[in-house]
Image (cartoon, rainbow, N blue to C red; front, side):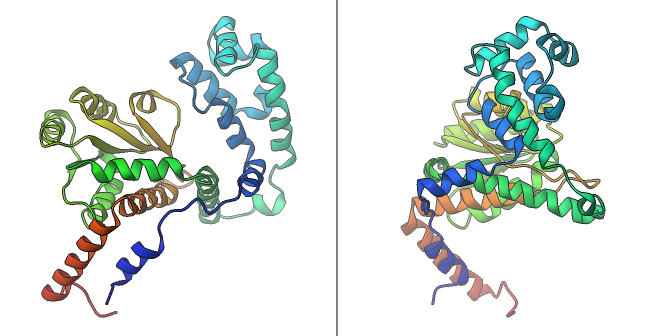
Length: 311
């Protein structure tokens, strides 16, 4: 008899499951911040341009109505830098970019929280923020082709290296623990420096082709060093992080973003956790025969050695 996990592997294969009209409807209901970030997505930005993008995102309702001089002063860049930023996004100049931002800013003002929302307690606010992160992730996966593709690549990489340093260790360990059920050789790097380099080099020499790296805030310099080291030894890097812009994203071959909850003293990771599970599902789908064989073998071992309680 198939275990619950085996049944889920069979039943949860990723399909598009979407009509184009449904996907378009969800894009239309995206939050103002998501709509602003969509303007920046897919563009390689310089450090100065990333500062402009971050300022526009963080201060949308004000920034959308600033002159080019005022924006440059607020961000601390030159006016030509603002013009080049607008051009890099495909606009004819800063006035055209501002014209695109203003309706989004006005919709943000119209959707400002009311009195009831302001009286939520901190835990409720934190949960609401995580719900928003999950909603944003759901919209981004309306067309799951990239997840399916990366799942196939990670499944083919033997060995597969999973990287997570500092606070990101928990996500890396979770992913690796689950991935070992369906993949023959999963290795985890949770320390930086020469130890990380040794692990990456050995993985590449053993035939590995991909690294999956997790980078949650605060983003560590040593994570950037490990990603660069992976690329340096010939491995490709898929990155799960909270920011689509920045030096880590610039170094990765594939970037998957999921927002983190930052309302409490320590961040929470509902959306990155779901995204991780989605990538695992895509890996399982990529080689269903291997997946089923490995899950059956594990269930046999679990039963033989009495791993689990009878809940």
